Structure formats: C-alpha cells, structure tokens
Image 1 (tube, rainbow, N blue to C red):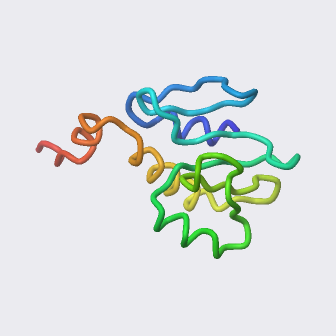
Image 2 (tube, helix red, strand yellow; image 1 turned 180 degrees about the horizontal axis):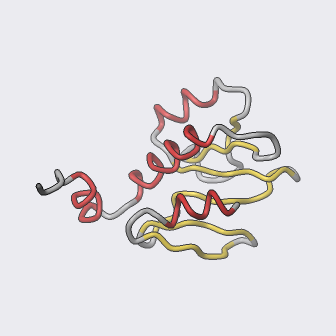
Amino acid sequence: MPRLRAICLSLPETSERMSWGHPNFRAGKKTFAAFERVQGRPSIAFRLAARDITRLRRRKRFFDTPYGRGRWISTSTDAPLNWRVIEDLLHRSYREVAPKRVLALLDRPARR
C-alpha cells in the first residue's frame, strides 16, 4: 500500500479519501484508483478506457471489478506485482478522470 499511495499522490491534484471502507485516490473530484478487498483478496482497482479493460481481461491476474459498469478492472495484490505495469495503469487511470486543465499542464512541453 505505501508504494501505491506514493505513486498516486505524486500525480497533480490527487487526494486520498476513505470511502466504502477503503482508500480511494482521486484526481480532482473523481476516483481513479482504489485499494480494497474483493472476495477477501487485497486488490487495486483502476478506472480505464474500454480498450485497456478488454486487453487486461485476457491476463490471468486481472478481473472485472464488481462495480463501475464495466469502467473498472482490478488486480489482486497478494502475489508479487510488476510495479512498472501498475504505475502505467495508474497513470492511464488518472488520465481517464483528471480535469482537462491538469492534463494540459502535464502534456505541455518542458521549458528550456
């Protein structure tokens, strides 16, 4: 959980809130990730684009999150994680819900 928290909170205008009995990470007012138990197993839930969810469903460790009308997918965290993949998914999830003005700042080329 500390590594998940650090990645999420490193993104602009992200906050952590307890909702439904577990931590949720929000970009502005919208949740993009959650750390929770699904069927007794610790899991991370991501809000992703439909094409990403379709791709991840083919992987063994991913499963449909039991809420979110098909906009969420989860992975269990009770086995070693590939943190490069997790970080990529967190960034994708963040981009799904972050305010447009924040995304514009992220996508702006760096000044020299």
